[in-house]
Length: 299
Image (cartoon, rainbow, N blue to C red; front, side, top):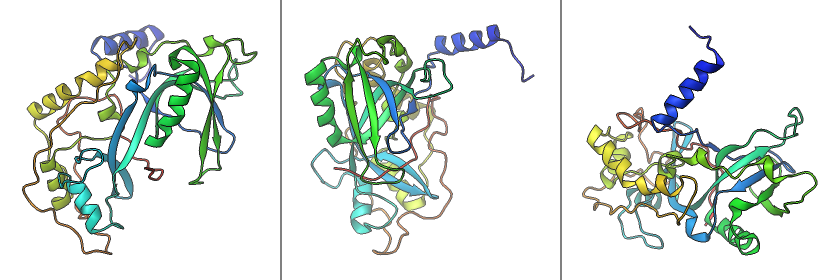
């Protein structure tokens, strides 16, 4: 039966929360030049900023982010995706890009809403790592960004690769944007895991298998449990209220024991055309699907 009552819906939500299934976290997006949104950023210091180096893979015309296995600033051969890109720069594997992932509660402009803005929702804003300087400036000016509202404006038309974003700290006595528009409630990030939301973490063996066969091997239940345990600190760090800095999970990559099959330079066949298996097969449920949209690289 497809119909249900409000009470039944509340019971389902309560049960999901009891099972550790937090509110689904979306992705922040302003579509066109001049679009604005009001946000409360879930960051109190630069120590809490979330960074990752990721490759973007073209799989069936869609983009998939996978974490790079090389340490920051190094290229020691630990990452098969780096080798694949070096062998075929115009192929289906991008160069590793340094990314910043910003957790925030956001309200978009909506002329049909009573307040003129939508109900706040939890989102991740995916930006080049260099954007962290902008956040550092705002932290220096306003302190804990969880305690203030920020006006975010897009400067650039849809599709413009030179698009920038401005961020303005709003005073508590602003005549339009009142603090209660977005309460300082970040419980939507409870049980949140950035490594399962915005990109995938794969081992050297899994990456080798992918480059060779076009498929990531299925993980056993034990492997899935170990993956969840390895990033437990991420979820804990972003449960509300925050009391400490974000600690990125550390993983020592296994050495690459075999040479990936690399396409002939200049020919876009770095990844075979075989069907790609569902990377989440046999893994614990996740509250969000890894990002598949790609807006360009920045370093």
